[in-house]
Image (cartoon, rainbow, N blue to C red; front, side, top):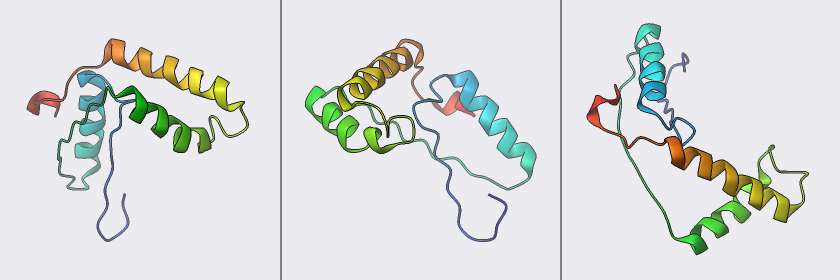
Length: 95
C-alpha cells in the first residue's frame, strides 16, 4: 500500500461487522496513505450461483486446495452461515 501508483484494498465479507470495518478504516487513516473509501455491497442468495462460485473459486484457495471437494463445499457453506449471523449491512457510518 505504500508503493507509488494506484492501489485498491477490498474489504470482503470476512469484515462483516461495522466495528471491524471502522477498525480497518482507522488504521488506514492513521497510516497517512490518504486512502479514500468507496462502498459496494453485493448480496447473493441464489443457491445455484453460490454453489458455482464455491466450486470454481473457493476450492482453489489455500484453505481448500488439498481437501475433498464435497467436504470443502460443506465447510465453506458453514463458514458462510457464521458470517451471515453476524453481518451488519454497509452504511455511510462505517467509516
